[in-house]
View (spheres, rainbow, N blue to C red):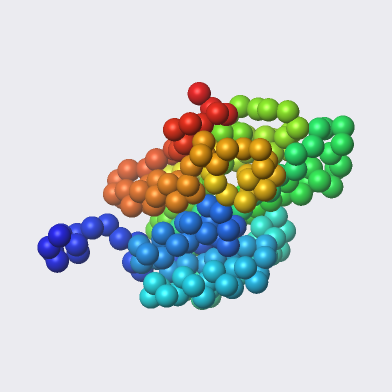
Length: 249
């Protein structure tokens, strides 16, 4: 490839990207890929130590990286985290709501506290972070918010009532945000991700055959492609499935 063609390749250089759940699984794959694409990163995770280790590795790509440890479902922490990102980089171009949690329990055994924990992380957190991030993006003239949902936002299976409620809610929230923020030049994308070879899935369901799942880097590549679309276009929803997906037609 000639130098001229290389310079014409789309890049995220100079963009500030905030990734929740950034220290493991899909979040870690996203941070690695976006750092290679030139983005400055906020690696946010409930585990601050893991976020710090990840940030130190990502700096090897020659980009600015800042680690944040906080609970996305806590309103004060979410507002503070967006403020910290703006203080660090002076801008916030992309928010990727990727953090998620689940409890595999029947409704009869699920406590109100457990229900609230899942809803807070998977649904309230994305709302709070998008609320504060979009305030800045509106003033800045635009931005992009990506909400990572799941095939659990399209169909249901037993013993996952809180997870389904949160992911169906997140998909609806994402489309509502798309409608509300589009006039302000803020793109909003919902990502329906099928089964991935991540600790989130394999540690809870060791009976799964990893060969039927997809590498989280594949989903990360799809998200990067969405972020690199020309300004005149937006993908409101994208579905990325492994070829042998068993939980989705």
